[in-house]
Image (tube, rainbow, N blue to C red; front, side):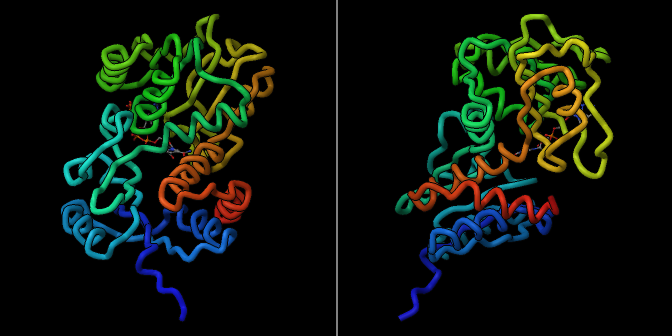
Amino acid sequence: MEANYLDNLVGVFGSPVAENPTVVMMEAGFRELGLNWKYLTIEVKKEDLEDAIRGLKAFNMRGINLTIPHKIEVLKYLDEVADDARLMGAVNTVRREGSKLIGENTDGKGFLRSLREDGGTTPAEKNIVLLGAGGAARAIGVELALAGAQHLRIVNRTPARGNELAELINGKTDASAEYIAWDVPFVLPGDTDILVNATSIGLFPDIKAKPGIDYSSIRPGMIVCDVIPNPPRTVFLKEAENRGAKTLDGLGMLVYQGTIGFKMWTGVDAPVSEMKAALKQAFGL
Ligand code: NDP
């Protein structure tokens, strides 16, 4: 008999969600491994999240991704939340264990994996400049701090958000952090090991935009990372490459955050290169 899909449903809740590319990556992974799983892209309005979570339980789904506007609100409806996700105050992946729903955040973990595997380095004892203090920056900042970063300088346009992230890291992790006002162009301190653009500057279609930093303060040997997945080679990364830095694009982070969720749900290592190829194709790259 044909196996049915009901035990193996996952997906994403968001609004608007139609353009979300994760389905392409997950389905490519399921296909590659011959797994009888299905990933559904589901439009769920802000006010309907509680009902949607009930539906997830009723349908016996194995888990769900959350995107705008649900990443914070969903914490109310979960049975457990992983320590790092609780620190960030945001969940992007829910997995079901028996009748329990457990919240995780794989965004920062995806970034860390890219840093380790593609960048060949770890954050341990590094001085890091993080541009931005929004959702992506919070996830990255917390994971870098938990992974042993020495000092984080949070540079953000809006002081309140920057200060809040620095206080969170100082208060809840062993790393130290400070907020620095973003006076354009921002000159990188000489001891910077890793620079991360975690703002949305440079995202398609605004592909000529680049963060307001003094690019001559990028030194050879620095690791420079961008969260922007599309286009992967941003002007920011090209400028950094021209100055001899090693660069990491946001496509790596996007693929790894998905592959980490894939493993949490299925228990099987995700086929990274096939999933990355599917995503590139979806972006027309
Ligand atoms: P948020 O809206 O939460 O945060 C946006 C950040 O960018 C804020 O720090 C904001 O500063 C800053 N920013 C935006 N425009 C400007 C500007 N013109 N000048 C200075 N600062 C600016 O968004 P997210 O954190 O959720 O997403 C940020 C980016 O990360 C997006 O491009 C998204 O695509 C990408 N992303 C990539 C992922 C991946 O896997 N590769 C995963 C998640 C996100 P302020 O606080 O002053 O408004």
